[in-house]
Image 1: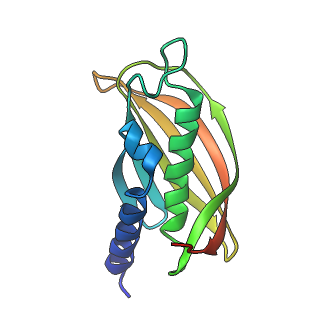
Image 2: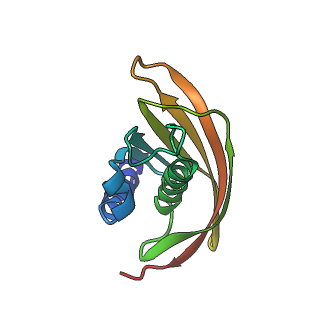
Length: 147
């Protein structure tokens, strides 16, 4: 199987799964890019994703990072398998309002049972300026696909 075939299978798999993400679709998240071992998502600023001070809510930031890194892991998981988050640790670096946030998930190491990933979350301002928002490390378990 060629690298292009592997990448297209990863893209198809992640796109199909993303369409099942009710919360992300409700919040307006978009799948921007998938390659084997990497995934990028975007989440626009709206009243659905804010906390009481008007900035992006940490829960929304954490969810976007979790899902981007999870899809990076899924792109490398064997056929017939899924991934589920075992744990993650996130550091919030700065708060932002307006624009959107982008999370780029990457696989650090893909094992048979566990996959370790990271995610970088950046704020993209309306003028295009990019600023660091959060960093996350995650452990995924490889499980049987249940749907």
